[in-house]
Image: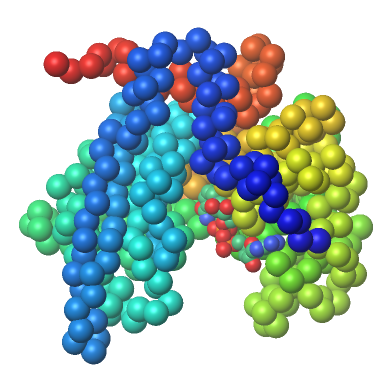
Length: 424
Ligand code: NAD
């Protein structure tokens, strides 16, 4: 069903307004003073660069790129770089702030940053992308660095992009500086466990939530929307941990098996055929209806705004674990709260990725690389501690888990600013 975008739904699904609404509510409940609110609403630094690139046919094109540091109060700015035609300074600014809160929720020593270049990467060759990336890096280099600002991959950028950034920075600084970016290839200072980290983090916080319901993985039915990096890894790891993954929802349909899907076989089927549909071990069901299945855990891991005021009342899950960024609107939060659905908010649930990015940065600086067990054990410790901090705080202050997460994050960042003091 495609919903008509009425003006109110358009406002409801505007991610920046949604983040602002949560910031306002958390700041008000914390009683945060007006001056600090002003600081936290504003980026520390916003750099716009115009990037000339020689195309393969010899023509010169000029692209516009940004790097925004929202906060460096708790440590270097941390956040991805995206390449897309609809990148804008407003979007990059809002995503940088989002990173500040996410890093503070899991209590890692980073602030928030984000970057982007306005371009259509599908129209650029590999060599054009390399020249674009290197020139962009050279133009923002003064604000980058392991102790300043540490980018990572985001939409349409990947470990190759990070390798180019690392190399360009290193050539200028006359020494290999792997810690300047995360999300690098394993052989160039990347971390073991990074590809699985976000999905694994979702599993750890879900296991914590299960304890509150007295559920064991074997008694737990799970519906996952999105079978990509986050959803696919979560499905694989949760199935291996004994969860019953009853439905996987993709853009072209959904598959269902009440006894639990064979996730490894479904992955192979999708790899071989390009779709989850036609899988012999499941029946096909409507992808919208699959969201409303009676299940213990719903894990949206595809895109933003899939749970809105228009459909939240139909959800029948006990636990909502937000693998995607921004899957639930502010209006839907109230409906979910009335229904007693236990929400593990995105800035906690999907923070496993940035947590292992932090481990990558630590390993690069140590020059000593951890085995996968150590990475996973330390990830578990951080995810479990953060879950307990947030849920405990929300209960104590009688707010929902999302507002609890924002309150903890704002409070941590505000504490750092107050304690450091404003210089000069
Ligand atoms: P991805 O592209 O690997 O996977 C997304 C999957 O969702 C794809 O398989 C796609 O086909 C599917 N999909 C797209 N539209 C859909 C729809 N309407 N219904 C059902 N399925 C649909 O992306 P990803 O890296 O897994 O990211 C997914 C979400 O998680 C995004 O919101 C992203 O911002 C967030 N996230 C990702 C990470 C990470 O480490 N990858 C970290 C934090 C947050």
